[in-house]
Length: 153
Image (tube, rainbow, N blue to C red; front, side):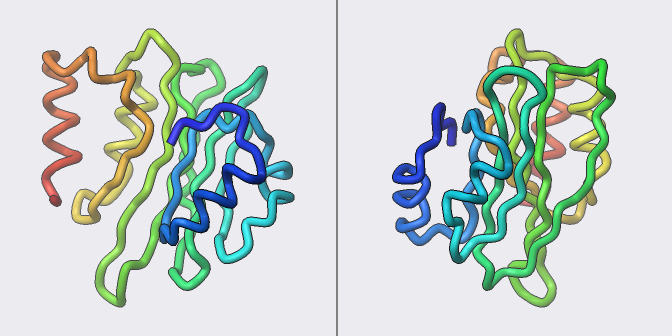
């Protein structure tokens, strides 16, 4: 969800809906500011954008086991921001949730390919917040990416 200028009341409304996982892009808050919004029953995984605006977060209900998957993006690649979290759905099934933001103009950068390729192909991937990529739907790279994302669904 893109929620420019996330407020405590907007976050409370999202959490009150009963979602187990919430992915947020462009929250315009630091990790500390989001944490101070009383995330309550959720574990917060957040990343502050270096510079003006932005910010990403994934909130996972505390009743689900979850952990952040570290992904290093080179400092020179400012086109992609991402938070990646692995969530245990049950004893034998995991889901990888990525809250991502690609700055316009959208590009399938090496960092984005690394994101998709470094994750286990056997684990379903829920990729949230990349709507700016849709303009690439006809390219060969985008078709390969779609195949990778959809192979487990």
